[in-house]
Length: 248
Image (cartoon, rainbow, N blue to C red; front, side, top):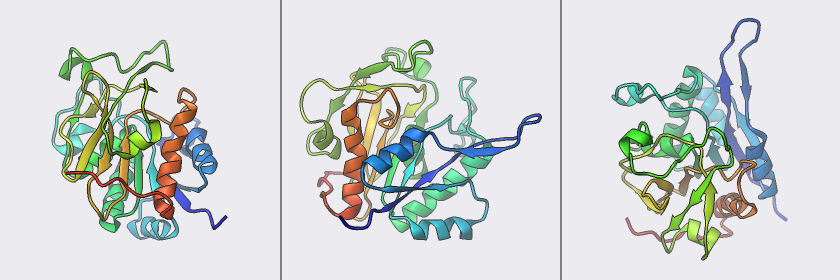
C-alpha cells in the first residue's frame, strides 16, 4: 500500500467560561472514519493567521469540513433567526477563511452538516434558516428525544452518492433545522429527503472534487454503508476512483 493521504479536519472551538479555559476539540467519529477509510487525519485548529493556515493546507491532500452549530446568517447579509445557535465566532471566522482558501486552491473537500452548508454559501448559495417555518410541510429533520432520528433519501443517478448506496431503501440520520435553499453555481444536488430538503451536493466543476452531505456519516447513528462516502472521498484524492461526470 502506498503512503496514506493526510486529510485535514477543521476543529470546533469553545470559548472560555468561568473557570473553564477555551479549548479546541474534534468529535472522534471524524478521525476514526478517516482512519478506517485509509487516510491520516490532521486537526486544523482555528488559527487567526492566514499564512499559518495556508502552511497547514500545504501539508494535506484534502479537507473535511466538520459539522457543528449554525452559521450566523448576519455574516451573509440576512437577519438573525431566533432558532439559530451560532458557531463560536473564532471557529466561524476561521472556517470561512479556510473554505475560501480551499476553493481558490481547488483542493478536494468534503463538507458535513454545517460544513456542507458553508461549502455552498461561500460559493454564492443561501440557506433556509429554520425548516419548520421555511418549509412547513417538510418531514421532521431533528428529534430532541431521538438523536438517531432517520429519514429516507432519494438519490440522483450518475453521482458519487449513487455509487456509495446503490439501489434499495436508504435511510440516513437527521439532526438539523437549517438547510440549503439556493445552491451555489457549480454544484448539483445529488440526493434529497423525500420532502425536497437537500441532503447531498457534488461539484460539477472538472477542476474541483467537492462533495457535501447534510447528514452525518461519521456519527454513531450512521450506518456501516455510510463509511463508504469517506472511502470514495479518499479514493478520489488518490485517483483510485473517478469523479462522476455530472451535468451542470
